[in-house]
Length: 583
Image 1: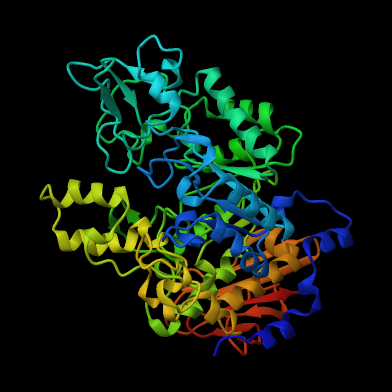
Image 2: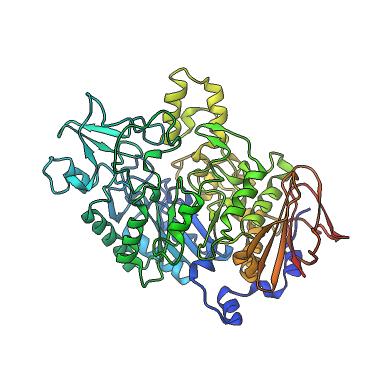
């Protein structure tokens, strides 16, 4: 049996309900606001439909602000929401100062902002600054002639030997990174699909235009920005061919170029210096040292970065690979940045580009599904940094049971089908079996609010994308009423994190037994310390505290009663998690 609300309250005590501000006041310290919050990503198209057209929108977001506040969320990242022809679900922007009509009007956005602020929630907007849509006014003018004043807003080159300027490949299986434009007889560069031409950050006029966009949204009350594909901004100065196997990986020609830090510092200087605006980058391909360069708070670049070292370990393009606990342990140790206290990490397990964490890292046995989702919450919310919960993660949403290629919406899935199956390289059954586990469409099915038709996401006869058929069991309304639910556990874990600073900001130390299915680590901050113990297995396991560690009270557990400490050993049931205070 899992832990009940009454048990949680008894174990956690009244100190658990201290707000971050109260905790700081008691300690006589001040902290940047983003170090105090748990953040939440909204994928607008799939969050909540407020006008009944089958598509999520800002009307629906405003209606659900109370859910976020009750969960304990302090900041919301709204994924791509600007006007777009939707070649890549909003990540091809046509107008940075206009809300996508599917999502409503600027008045709808302002209402959402006002409701969020009233509940103490900061709003972070997605900025897609590596590229625009080919329908953006700048690109329309850029391609009009070689002498257009907007020509140098993008990257144009002559072809070579009747083909593209070089052999660079675009992401998402989109083929060449160059698209020929017959009107002017040149090729333009696109890191992603051809409808997403890359901006030329070498041009100071481009940077000035982008900085004005940031100021526009900051003036409307936005608290920060998430920068899409930030490590792709700095293109190589030399544009020669890559040799076979060189820099293997997604969009490798455009990852962490040598001028990236200069661009980020320029943006900081012109927009963010002297403000409390928060900035976080999507840092594909960034090493540990590159993350330090971007986010060390003495350098004046960005605040934090999304890393992908862990998320890319168990997938090779469309092919699913095994998840290894050792990979998770190694990444969490590296991401603690014990070597640099000036780096503030970011913690997440899923977002709109990855499958559901409960299906990916949790148990495949139905009887342990909810328990393993709680274990993952225990881990994610007890690590240093700003945690990001993705919509539906707090109720344990799982992957969708995809069967046919026609079930998918994502351009990446359809490009893969064309390149691998229709070409005859891979059998259809093998491709589909793997794709069902790795596709980012798993994260894009509508949010499951209740057990009414379409999971309460929309009153339309048909939503824009299929609802997971498990919505009758896995939904917010059902779990809100259940003290033993995944949602109730997330609430308790967020409160615990806010009350115990060692969980959010303490020093990390791995104390896991070698080769074990048990993952254990300490969290220390000043005179306060805790040990987190997680059994990543469908089998029972035991963990013996290392010499010198003495556990006192149990702060939280995902089962009741929580596993006790007997003579220094904790006997864990399958997928059990506990956090004990250390003496």
